[in-house]
Structures are given as C-alpha cells and as structure tokens.
Image (cartoon, rainbow, N blue to C red; front, side, top):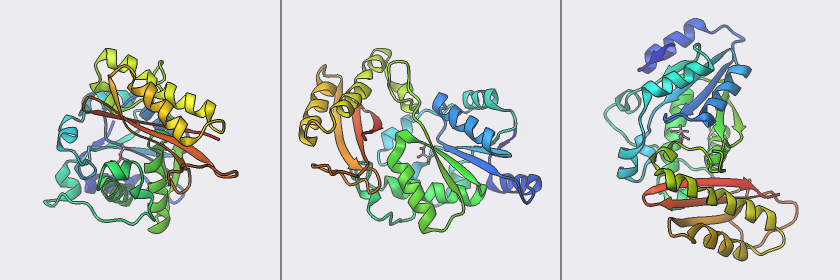
Length: 282
Ligand code: PAF
C-alpha cells in the first residue's frame, strides 16, 4: 500500500498513473477509521479507477484545544483497515506543515448561511476550517467523486455549497450512516467513550427514531421536550441541541410546512465527548 506524507509526491504519483478517462474517488477522513469509513472506501473502490483516502486531523476545524489534543490518532491501525478493503488504495497522511506551512489558519467562507446553524452556532469557525481543508484536499487530489457520510449532514451540504460556489469539478456522494449494533452512529469519538457509556448512548438514536415516529403528530417544541427528557433522563448525557431543520437551508423551524423535507439534528455531550446524529423525518 502506498502512503504519501507530502502533497508533491502524491500529485506526482497521481499524474503518473492517470489517463484521460481515469476516475478518482476520494474519501477525506481524520483517521481512527471505523466501518462507516470503510463503507465509503468500498463505495469509492467500486465506482472509480483510483481511490485516495486522506488521514489528517485538521487543527483549524477544532474550536476546542482539548478535543483536538484528545482526537484519536491511529495511523498503523487505520492502514491495516484500509488494506482489508483494497491494497491499491492510496493513502495521503500529511503533517500539519505539509498542509498549512508555517501558518495554521483557516480561510473565510460564505456558505450562504448554512455555516451559521447548529454545528456552526456551537463550534464557531468550525466550517471555515472544514472549507479550508476540503478545498485544499480537492485541489491536491482532483477527485472525480468525493464520499461523505450522512452523519455529518451539515458538513455535506456545506461541501456541496463549496463545490458549487468555487466551481470545483467534483461530484459529492452522500453515503448512509453506519451504526453500532445498539444504534449509536459510528464515530471516531466513540472510541473515547467508556464501555458502559457507549452502551447507554443508544438513547441518542432511540430519541431520534421516537421523534421521527411522532413527527407530524406533535409540535416541534413537544418533540424537543421529549427528546431532551429521553437523552438526559439517566444523568449520563447533556443535550447541546435538538433541532428540526429544513434539509436544504438547514434553518431550524418551530412549525413545519407541507412539501418541505425536514431532518432532525442532535448534539449530545457525554462528559467532554461530543456526539452528533441525524435522521431524515419525511
Ligand atoms: O468529516 C471529517 O472527518 C472531517 O471534517 C473532514 C471532512 C475529513 C475534513 O477534515
């Protein structure tokens, strides 16, 4: 398996193997790979001639230094997992210096307001960091197709906006959420949960599916109260937000309308570990 630590080497290799009709699939990640990531890789391998995965814990998208410091970094284990999908996948695992040089700062982006809702409200600057790294990686890898997981649905809409506003010729592919057997959405952060908390975290998806079942029969406020009670009942979790939002604009609503697609979004803390999840409602 080829692992590249700097962009020049990766670009040179890609130029040497690409022919005019070659398609390249790209899976950007921050490592600590789980089955959800592997499903994105499998999708990419099935649909493209070349697949590239990036493994880079991007400092500019963290608004909490402790979260950045504690983010799991498991390159050797990640490479072993990638190999189970295909030994032909190209791995780009750069240093911070390779990406940012001596100036580790974000660019500034206007995503037409998508960046101000939910994650953007609670993680100031987060989407500037995501926009910076994703644009940068797209420029290096020049993918035909890029694969993103549904769990980070707001991020997916922002990447779609990035691509359309900057005229980047890449197709953004949405891949479904992978869940642990108890329903917890797979996330690299799950590694940091104590086993008992990880089991109890099933309540997050239970609350979302309850909201989905009751959607249309109860008001948004009633659903928020119910979800809050479910999530916080045993004292292990603290709800940061539960919103029902228009899937296209991501604007949270208190009243729903016909002919609009809605989605529930949730962010929950287990001590200092932050978990997010989402389900489509209609
Ligand atoms: O979803 C992630 O893992 C990250 O936000 C991404 C897209 C790899 C950018 O750092």
